[in-house]
Image (cartoon, rainbow, N blue to C red; front, top):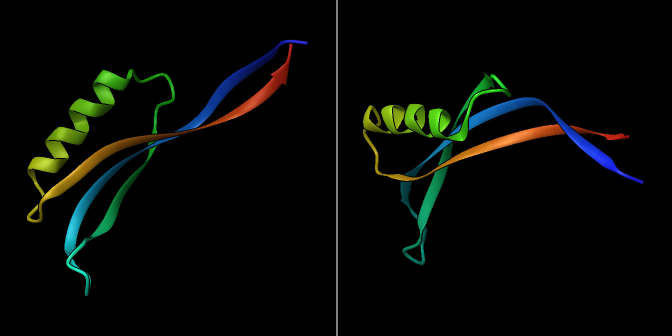
Length: 74
């Protein structure tokens, strides 16, 4: 049995440091940008993430892409 994953939605997440907790560890806040085209390449999504990171006042801790896929039996 073969299973195929078909991406149905994607989002770009830019994580920023939003202060520190009592132990001195950074508190992260996620800036989510939904409705990213599932067909967009990871390079393109990362480039947009870097551009958005440059607009943030707080330090950026990372850029992520989150995909949701339907699994189909083929």
